[in-house]
Amino acid sequence: MAEPFVGPPRPAPWFPCGPASSFVDITQANAGPLSQIAPCSTEDPQPTGCRVFLAPSKNGGDTGSDTVIELSRDPKDQVNKTLRAGDQVLVFKYNGKIHAIDNKCPHSSYPLSNATPFDIEDFGITLSAGVTCPKHDWSFDLFTGNSDRGGYKLKLWEVQMRPSGQDGDSEVWVRKKGRIG
Image (cartoon, rainbow, N blue to C red; front, side):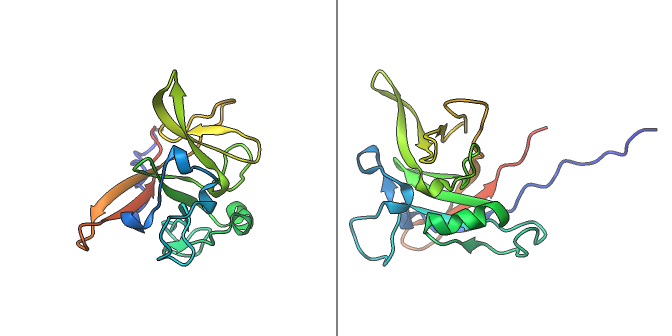
């Protein structure tokens, strides 16, 4: 007996993460743990180099919510939520590009908001960018998700810049990438 056709799963919903100008542009020169990087101005009382969100679930799932929740900026507080609270996404700007990745190291489940971004270079030529998890010093490419050792792969999220109509700034929207196949 033939199986009935089942369509592909629907992609995850997009959700807003704030204006692009609210993200500190991190460069190799000022790189350090993402959660500890702060801009030169003091307009934001607690500015950091990254923001962590608990992604909305399609049906309320693990979070019991269809809304976006911005989590504490303290990585120690995120450790408890990482393992039981659903999908956390880490959003930050490195070398002028907004990146969105899982806030969980695929090797050790440690919060990557404590990770340090870096340029991947070969003979002085920048080929890509990556983050290093401080727990075991494993590194992951921000464009492919590949690790520097083992078969672990960092989950990358889709990023979209949408016009916000305020001062020409763009709004950052992210969603979980769909599975292929």
